[in-house]
Length: 297
Image (cartoon, rainbow, N blue to C red; front, side, top):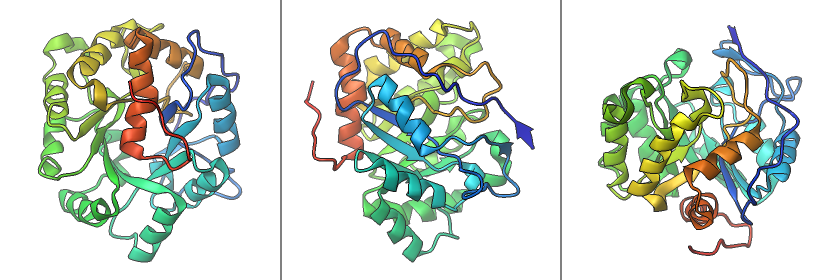
């Protein structure tokens, strides 16, 4: 089982002000291990990254809303996620891992707790969790009527192998981590063009995250900027941002999450665009019910 670097606990403040009601569209929760152990065949070792630590990181960044995403290290055991949602409160919602083993009663319990999305993981390093095409379709048929969005993690594969499974669905689909980009190919990357084509459909979204991991230039990861700006140009109303805290499967050096906020400011130098990405777009997709509405930009 692979072991990866832990997160940086001392979050630095971002250089630019964070708009009120900003949303981190993907974090994960791990532990405490004595209460929520990962499954024995998990693809990687995790360190405790509790909801309290996540909330402290968000407070330092000025983040007030978030989406906590189920890790494959827990499989379909959502105990840690549901407990985290209870503690975090109504400004947070969850995204689960749903397959045929999750019965209707469990699905209802997840919905009641604030889960509003289902994530499909196709990352090659997560071989023990790869869903089949039939499983994807069956899960979509169960969760879309609940108003859930779908989420695709496709790093390391050709997205054209996966996205046709969902292209005929009338529901929102989020592509994680800027899509499976091939930085060495630059603007000619066919994966990059495929994601842009999906964004033009009107119900596909892209999450600006992991620019640091995909970078071949290293800190401050400015080679990610051209990709992010192109996505913003194509569909500014369907772009999200996330830290991906606590950065599972990161070989290091792990970024400080304040640095990732600064990277977003280079993706979107205009404050109004950043507010759209951090506030307006997440509210449109996730429909937070914490009693506060982001202002349209």
